[in-house]
Length: 231
Ligand code: DX5
Ligand code: ZN
Image (cartoon, rainbow, N blue to C red):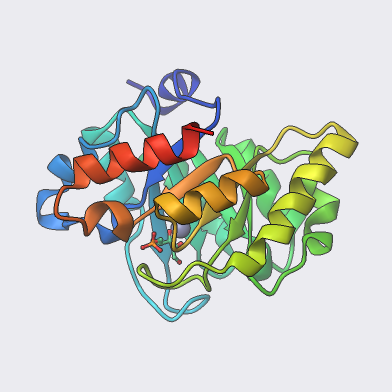
């Protein structure tokens, strides 16, 4: 199935859980990816270059493999310096959504344009220290705003509840300006913190260790689904 054909069939109606394969067992990636139901989940791919963040993970090769193993929406989170030049390759590898970091680009508008031109859903990520006001020039045309709830670079870190005002502010800005972006949170998400983030206005929930490092990953995913959808 071609990436563009796949993209139209994906869930865009929140709440959406996005298992992060950073915490998965790569020796059985097919099994780990099969956990995500393409009709309701996304698969989150953390790309790190050991420059923008102090960790090195994977590139288009792994996204291409994931594309062959799942029809789920591939939500590619680029934690790389000057991401624009790598966007076409990630899109060709099968990325459906590409999220760049505002702090990683000299030309944020140009980088977002590169994602749009490649035909992927356009996402912008903010590190904990970056205020929403820094993203304001770009919000009106985004498909996704990612509010990091940990310092990017590693899975298994503690959830930063101090980011909830930024989530609330982003939801209020969207209403005030009639924008359409989904609000995603990433880092330290588990059933309890997912509820906290949902109540602040989050709609997409990236989850690494709270799924893939649990004794029963399937049951853990079910608990997340329940946590984000029940009031
Ligand atoms: C961190 C990554 C996250 C991470 C989440 O920089 O962007 O996606 O994998 O993992 P947990 O859920 O374990 O915090
Ligand atoms: Zn991520």
